[in-house]
Every structure is written in structure tokens, then in C-alpha cells.
Image 1: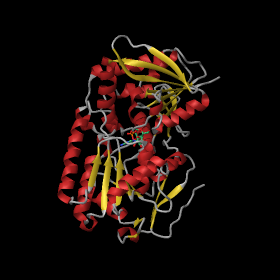
Image 2 (image 1 turned 90 degrees about the horizontal axis):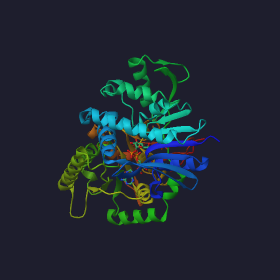
Image 3 (image 1 turned 60 degrees about the vertical axis):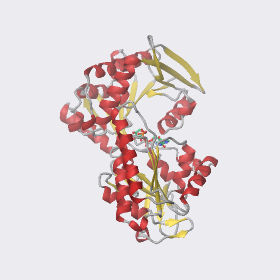
Image 4 (image 1 turned 90 degrees about the vertical axis):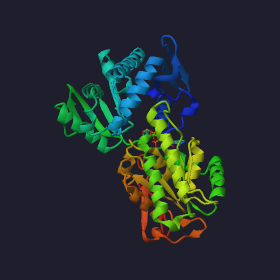
Length: 461
Ligand code: ADQ
């Protein structure tokens, strides 16, 4: 019987890691079909890496440790310091290192070997994300001819940016070795197709396929979603209520505006903090009536840019609070730690506005989670960057250019003084008839995000 074999850098072998969007989606697909999940074990070994195989709840895991050299070259250097910034259009932060590319290729080859030794001709291989761009090349070189799909979770840049990568042709050729290549958004799909047509003599056919490098590949956008019902349930769980109660006791009657992100330069946090400062500058009547809470646990702190980002955020938050704070009011609360899903859902539910303003993002699941956590009788407003993949779907959020801090401040003003649980507060929001935001995940409900009156919830087919 044909099996689904997923390959990603990190797997959800640890049950605690089955909470994120990707992990949940993959886990459910593999669990339902009795598939396998291959990738890095998460450990670094001293000697030669060995393959470990184990099963949990119907899913087989095929795992390998990385050597220190592999971890540095493949993961830290090429994946996180070359591909991540380049694919997020941050050419200023990209570092190129031929040794790192060699190690990245070697790890992709080693993972492909590990998988080909264990798959059958009719299995379906499903490769995930920018760590494994070359995986299919080795799979094919090893003689495997079955079906293989690839999904990129992060953006795919325009050809003018992608071609900065010295190895752009090798990467594109390896992607075309899949039967299907999936992207988060139409913009990403169009960028890749344009690259193939303009730089590799690719020919686009009317059925969404491209002939390039002697292969025919279906190239499509498959925007990733969340489990909307599960998130709505999480937002009324015990832990959610406790978190909402805890923050509520500090807020008093103030409006909560919330941001939740990994601390990453792609998430636009310095620009967001600047916009919050402008909001209090430009709308002084909002001082003391709104409190912004930003949750952002540090990530990848071995990379210098991430350490610098942390320092910049500390400084900017201090500035906003120094300029505007008062004895009984903190304008911008900034918490550099993670919270669990239920707690976040509880905070989203009581927030008047969600600030999701990445400079560039493949999708951004926080935007969808914020929508699904809302109480339909008293929903908040989503302020969403036009550069997040989610903006292609959540048309009725307040869509902003995150670089335009004055406009983001204006959106905060529009969103914040809406309706409070204890009654109406006059403000700009009452001038606007309605904003809506949709949640993706197939045919999913459209939730009326902020409607002055009457309260109404509409459900799409
Ligand atoms: P990420 O860059 O990690 O993912 P995102 O989609 O926003 O971005 O978040 C993924 C998950 O992490 C969400 O479930 C969110 O709730 C959780 N999370 C984020 N910040 C958190 C925090 N401070 N504390 C606790 N949990 C937090 C990459 C791409 C995205 C793409 C996803 C999925 O960069 O563009 O949407 O993969 O494909």
C-alpha cells in the first residue's frame, strides 16, 4: 500500500512539538494514513551520525543526528544566514559561503539516502521547506522515480532577488525534480514561474505546469491554514480564561492590542514599535486608554542579527514607555518569552486589535489564529501587513504597509477605540461600517471582525 513519507528539517517526534501549524497538519495527515516522517532528530552527535527508527501512534519516524559541522554549515549558515534572509528579500543580511553550500548539499544527500533506503516505488514523498531545497535532486540521482511534492513555507522572492544566490540554477533544477511544487501565495508562485520562464527557458502550460530542466512540474499556491475549530475551542479553554483574567487585572478598562511573533527580523518588530510610538504621539487622547502587549520569544540567538534585534527592541520599547508611560500605565508591554497555544488564544480573544505586521512572511498563522479566537459577539480588529501571504486571503482585515509607520499608527487608532465589553467608547471606529477578516482552511467561516452595530456573524458556504 502506498504511504505518505514527509521530510522536514525538524519532525514532531516529541509530542510537545505537535502544537504548531505545520506540525499539527502533518501529524494528522500521517497519523490518518499510517505514514512516515523523516528528518533531523534535533541532536548533535560527536561521532558518525546514526539513523534511528521508531513508531508513535501509527507514525514511523526516521531520524538522524547532525554532526557539529553539519549543524553549523547546513542549518546555521546556509539555511538561516543565506536562504532565510534572501527569501525574505533581505539581501542586506545575506551571507554567502561556498563551504556552507557544500555542507547543505551533503546533508540533503544524506537525508535522501536515508529515505530512499526505506521507501517503496508507490510511496508519495512530501518535502518541506527551505532546508531541503536539494533533497529531490539526490532522490532522483539515487534512481527513485515515484511521486514527490515540495512545499515552501516561506516566501519565494522575485527572480531579481533569487538570482543573487550563486547556486540559483541548481536550486531551481532540484525543485523541478518534484512532480508538484507548492507555495503559500500566488505572489510566490508567480515569482518562481517567472524565474523559470525568464532565466531557464521554462515554458508555462495552460494547466499550471512548467516544462523546465527536462521535467514537467505542477506549480501552485496551496495556502496553509489552521484548524479553526480547535483554535476557537482553545480560546475558551480554562488556560485561555486564566491568561485573559491575568492580563485583564492589569489592563483595568483599557483596550488591549496584541502582537505575537517569533523574534525575527522578518516580523517587522522595530517598525511596529515605532508605529506604536507614533500612535501615542499622533493620538494623545488614546494615552492611558490602550495598552499594547508584544509577545516575542528570542529565536536563533547564535546568529548576530538576532542578538542585535533583541537589543534594538529593548531600546525601542524603553523609548516608547519612557516617552509616554505613566505611574499607572505601561503603553507597550514587551514579553520576550513564549506562551502556550491556549494562553495565546485567550489573549487574542480579549484583544481589541491584533497587530500582525511582518515585513515579509510566507503566510503568518498568527493572523488566522487571531481571527478564530474572536468572540463573534464582541470581535476585535486584525491589522495585517500587505506583505504577509495571509493578506491574499484575509481581504477584510485592515491591510497596512508595515514600513509606513504613520499608516500603521492610523490603523491602530481606527481599531482601538471600538467597542469595549463594558459599553461603547466613541472613536474613529464608529465611522467605519465594518471590517471583516476571513480564516482559511478550506470552506471556512467568515467572522465579522469588527462591526459597529448591530453585531452579526456571517458564515460562508
Ligand atoms: P513562523 O515564521 O514561525 O512560520 P507563524 O506562521 O506566524 O510564523 O507562526 C507559527 C506558529 O508559531 C503559530 O502557531 C503561532 O501561534 C506560534 N507562535 C508564534 N509566536 C509565538 C510566541 N511568541 N509564543 C508562542 N507561540 C508562537 C513559518 C513561516 C510562516 C508560515 C509558517 C507555516 O515563516 O510564514 O505561516 O511557517 O507555514
